[in-house]
Image 1 (cartoon, one colour):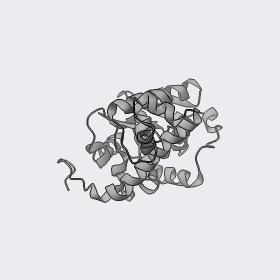
Image 2 (tube, helix red, strand yellow):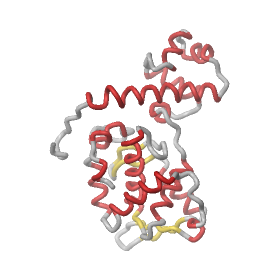
Image 3 (tube, helix red, strand yellow):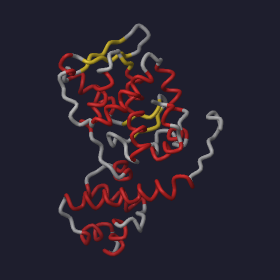
Image 4 (cartoon, rainbow, N blue to C red):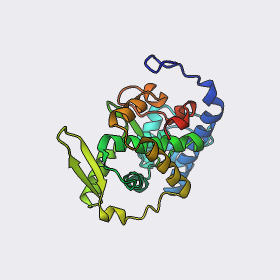
Length: 245
């Protein structure tokens, strides 16, 4: 298959297994959020304008929500539309630690390349576990898949003195870790996750930003998404994980 042409996606490969797991996770996510907020099934059903049995079917993964119901439910449960759709809530602290973990590998990393490394860590983890490492949602933009909060998080790390940002003559922003950042314990990252991060870092160490941008552009999650939409990491299961680490 040429990655320069419109890709053919064999959805039958993921529909029976991946789709069922993702649907169950999404339904469980809604149920967990509702319980954490102390809201009954009857109350949710009333606010959505549906019967209680219909709402129970949603939590059981047997009934899909309409777009209007989806929007109402996201407001009721206090999560974004994208988070509700993904079935997982982003772990912003873990995402910050993933960024610091890549910076601890010893090289100054361009801002755009750093975003792509974090994406590959989430995508690689999803390949085997059907969930991303950080739970972040990635949007299709010109320079590849990036979470909406990436630039804010970089600003926070810089403001907290955990990273340094150096602008080169050609306008690139090189990011490195400070001594303060090096003291930050990566407590959210498990051993197996750390090993994946290291593998990805070694794979792309010394390679130009253009290379990793072109690589992520030619992966199915990015290719199959519309411009500025949230990409579907579920499509990563049709890729070869050894291409990116």
